[in-house]
Image 1 (cartoon, rainbow, N blue to C red):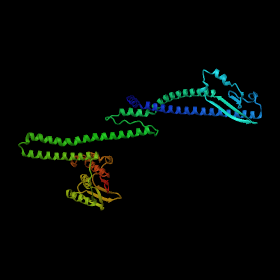
Image 2: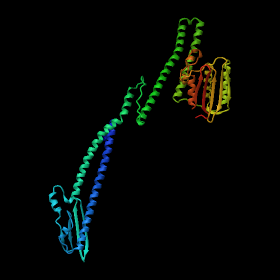
Image 3: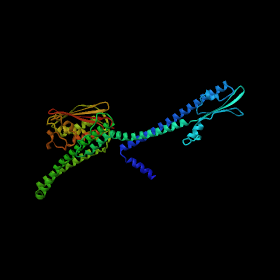
Image 4: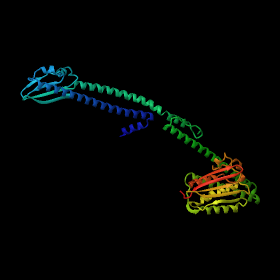
Length: 454
């Protein structure tokens, strides 16, 4: 059992090119053996059948001779070619005619090569009646030549099989290496790729085969990994940047308190208030990061319930109007839609987008909301008359910590995670979110969410 397992392990540890060659050689060997066996059997069958046909012809000729000439004499051998076939004609009393066949000579000449008892033999033994006399005819022939031919054929086939297997092994190694060459290139390229250098790509040939398809898939995977690492690196940098400021502020006020604030009530109150503000900002930032982490890991749990979307939009608009009286917030369409979804998450998305629109719209500007029912979805457009977003920035506004250059200031407030959270919520609800904008004219954020939660 151990020996068997070791053999299997040895085969498993071989390179793919060796495995392919061995499998190819084994299959070809089996095919050659089967073909050789069938060929030998067919040739043997044909030779045997031919010998029987010849003996039948000889018997017919002897029968005709006996019927046409009586009494029987040695002239039969002059009239009919018997060859190395043994012939014996007898009646019930004695042997009338018997040839001393060549087999007796062959037996002496070839006694080192053949044992006649082991050779295949063809014979016929029949009785015929001529003018009241019954004759027994015996024909017998050993297939010495045929046996010799079959032995030569077996030797040649054996030799050709060995040559074929050798050629199969050599050609198998060559073809397997050639076929697996693209895989070797893929392997070498993969070895050169590292986390610090994901710019390399595997060369893809023009032929549309499985290996090129694999190369394209790996290139796509590497591209996604590169994009993911770039975003992760940017994300880490942005988090560090966002946390550095409040930590520096807190540290500054702690030092201030340590030096002068112990006995100065005004400095103490100012320091405490600033520390509270910065810690609150850090808390909000960490909660937002925690939400995004849950969304990334599919751990965000939806609490679906039935609710009227138009009533939810009315409530959000009323609350926003109370907090932002310097902006005009209205809607041009708010269709009555009964939804089954996570009400709180949809409300959070609406608040994020509306607050973001207010943030980048000057006082007195307009934020317009339009909600309409489609077949299986509801579509919500939130349009503002703000500063707009450059075209080159639109694809990135839903990325974490991303701010377009014109709005990347502390004066606007926020952490740069609002739209990223909105997109995460919409994605969790199996919806879509996108933006359209023109600098100086405003921005439109569109949302499509299934009416029935999935």
